[in-house]
Image (cartoon, rainbow, N blue to C red; front, top):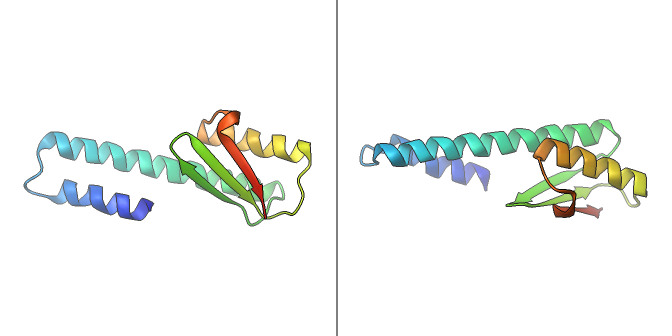
Length: 101
């Protein structure tokens, strides 16, 4: 999904018919996508270093879904996951949805 969005914005930037304002917005959107992808990667790596292997993070607006490759999670582990996600993705805890394998 992100690669398709990046490709679309890049086409706008490369277009000779796009106006300056459109190109500026496309640059801003590309930066936002890159920052989000970086934050997701950092959060996934931090989760892995804390022992939560095979995790995936999906961001849809303010809603963040986290799938953890573990069958059971303690309350402390859930709090640890929420802390990492809220810090790295600047998210509210109520918008973080954690699912187990």
